[in-house]
Amino acid sequence: MAIVAPRPQLPQIPSFIQACATYQPGKPIEELERELGIQDIIKLASNENPLGPSPKALQAITAGLKNLHLYPDASHYRLRAALAAKFSVDQEEVMVGNGSEELFSLLIRSYCREGDNTVGCGAAFLAYRVCSQVHGAEYREPPLTRDPEQEIMAMLQLIDARTRIVFLPNPNNPTGTYLNRTLLKKVLDHLKDKPVIVLLDYAYREYARAKDLPGPMEFYKDYPNLIVTGTFSKIYGLGGLRVGYGVAHPDLLLPLRKVKMPFNISSLGLEGALAALEDADHIRRSIEVNGLGMEFLEKEFRRLGLDYWPSQGNFFLVKMPSDPKPIYEQMLRAGVILRPVAGYGLKQELRISVGTMEENKRMVASLEKALRGQA
Ligand SMILES: Cc1ncc(COP(=O)(O)O)c(C=O)c1O
Image (tube, rainbow, N blue to C red; front, side, top):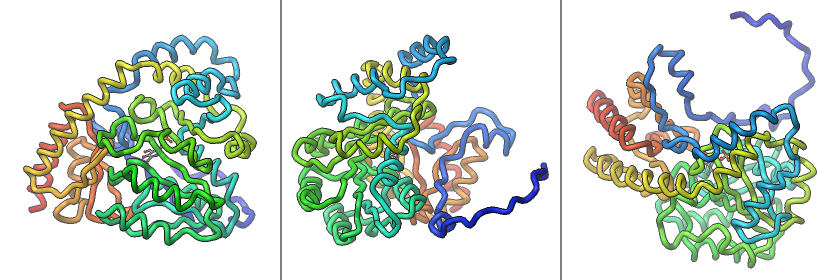
């Protein structure tokens, strides 16, 4: 349909907004249904929980429907209390965001001015770049390598007097790689006495199996400039609710509390997240299904001769033998949504989330066909 609104005279857009990259999310199922008129689509593009939401969260959300006429609790009291108990911290050290992405954004808005910069590891989660640029901060990262030590040393070189935040996703998305205890400590020691905030993004921590991947709170008490973030979008299966959290010293969080919108989490979001947090059974099953899926997919990638990055998350970064675009498109026509990652500078790779075993098998069969089509 043609646009009916008359073209407005607009104030000038700041140059850093004009220059901004736009975050490209995974293709929604509904969009593919509309475009191709097909049904029975599986989405393995956004690292969501293939088991769906926690049943306890669903119950709590249903019970909360009757209160939808009321504004939500702007202090997030009960959810913060539950998270504080989980992490053995005071409630004042916990902040809840509209997804952990909101916390990244609030942190940048609170601490960065135009001309400041933020730094991430190689091919770090794109939201750090987008959030930084939107707020006029320069985003820096070293080239991605298969040697985490070399990469982290290169990252430290990028930090200067205008660096305000260092983003460390552990494990990282889209690579699935991680910083071990020794390496992370090296970074934290390097930054300990600098006026720089270190954000440890533990969105996928619950899936990780490496014994030397440090726990979320392991360094918390020794490094005051740390903020540890987590999300209800991954293992808790609540990506659609948009709830994330951060744990840090109240002084670090104070400006974020001023900047945030008062009612940034819906009442259903608060109820759902609180119930999901206590659903140990759903978390256990999610870890189990992911573990079996990872083993299966690694075996299948090897059988297909595909080079993949060993992953600690619920996804794999997989190198295609040729341009991934036609492979991605053929997979779409087969009703399987994967994730292109060219925005990360990864021009020959696709990211594949782990699904249920049935979904994994269907994805592998379609991928094999698509690869044969390209041979
Ligand atoms: C590393 C990482 N951090 C954070 C997020 C975003 O989480 P949320 O849904 O809580 O905004 C994602 C989502 O894909 C992610 O990959």
